[in-house]
Figure 1 (cartoon, helix red, strand yellow):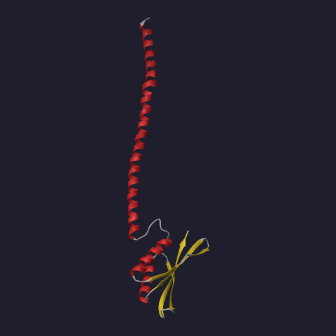
Figure 2 (figure 1 turned 90 degrees about the vertical axis):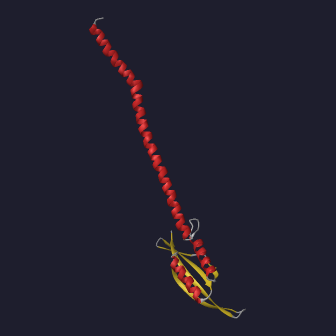
Figure 3 (figure 1 turned 90 degrees about the horizontal axis):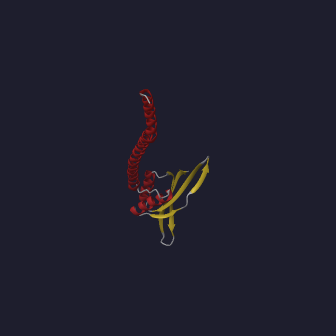
Length: 171
């Protein structure tokens, strides 16, 4: 074997060694580099997700504090919330809650209008304060306010009853 043949065998052997090393070492290294980049992106997304979750928890606590300051609750229906507000005001101003009937539902043009009727007994001044408070709460639109003078024949006394009709749209 002369030097020219040795050089050719050496070059061919070198190329074969490059192909074998690429196949077993370099290719795997490049694949691992791609996997590392993908995992780093996933880690960044998870870190971002954790901060977003924390932000949403803080926002939820803030919204719950607003609801709690207004004496509202997510679990309560509108009727329960209305009854809570009415009983709080009735207790505060020495009124008597006579009736809180089931809402009347009216459907027109795809809209559902609910009408709630509340009857309260007491003095004229306190009943006017009650009506004003219900209007200021903006839970529903105060559509009708009616005062009725009634007589208790056993005690021979007259008393005043206020009938409120509150309306709101529902889904």
